[in-house]
Amino acid sequence: MAVLAPATSIPRPFEQASAIKPAEVHDPPPRPAAAPLTRETIASPVDKIRWRHSRALGLPWRGRLVAGVRVPAAGARFFTWDPVQRRSPNRAWRRVGSDRLVRTLMRVLDEFAAAHPRAPRIGIGDLSRPGGGDFGVRYGLPGHASHQNGLDADLYYPRLDRWERPPRAVAQIDRTLAQDLVDRFVRAGARYVFVGPSTGLTGPPAVVQPLAHHDNHLHVRLR
Image (cartoon, rainbow, N blue to C red; front, side, top):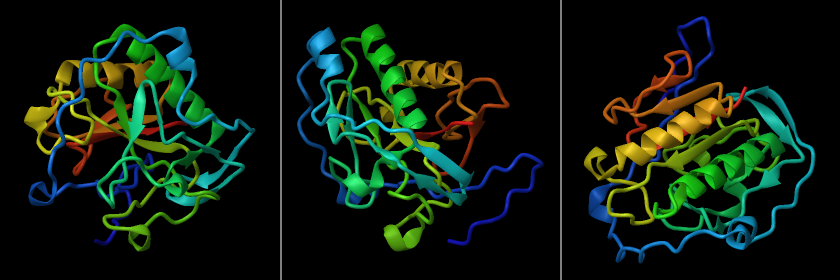
């Protein structure tokens, strides 16, 4: 699909979503009710994060990333999802962001889990590739027009049935939890939070903006 240049004065490139074909997806049994999170579980993801100072260069749709930080495959408050292979965890080279992006994700998800201890874990999708740069269709359909400099991340809306996979329809989204997640990223200083036009999710119009193909995930971009 061709990518159209933004028409507004504020650059806002379009990207294709990680659409899921219902006929190809078989939902697993639901997870049991989550146990209350403790300081130990929140602080101990499956993989340890190797922190280092990153540099996000250029633009989200024409940039690169220096010294990126990899999001763990899973943790007490999140899982990762590969939108191309449609399985968890996401491949390691698809979940690299700037240190500021990864710290923001971990902090927001910590706070979300503490506020909603019975909620399902949040699914994290693609961030950037190591080194950033093109993340288009040659890296798997549908590809991204942005996600090039470590400042973008996709997160899947929590489902009402608590299954840990992207919702296949808007009716499966827990809108109360999804709206809370959007609000937390707004308070965390996101430049944009793109949401699906059919989700009913709202926020400050300059930040929370509906974007086609985002009915199963939100797209956070830092400044």
